[in-house]
Length: 90
Image 1 (cartoon, rainbow, N blue to C red):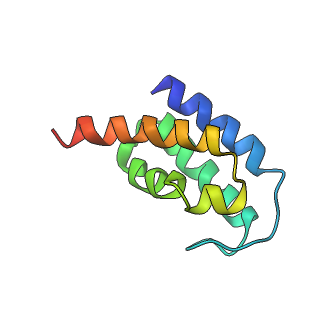
Image 2: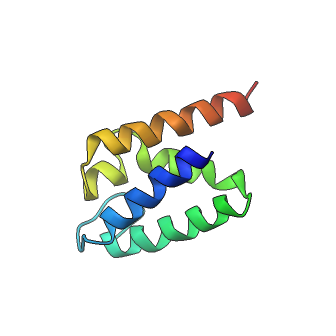
């Protein structure tokens, strides 16, 4: 979980440099950034309910790719989230 949160913080810093755009439920990069900060904070406080939101946002061709496109970081986060989701569903 620590590695995931560290990667999410990196993603949050990168995303903070973007503006405008549109993707899915987010009408701008600023709105996505605000929601990402909220979910990271909740995850840091033990709320694993946010995993589903993060998983969708970092899935290939979704919000992260649409706004930022840093494929290596996005894929790493998505794979970490996948492992967590798979453990939870067992």
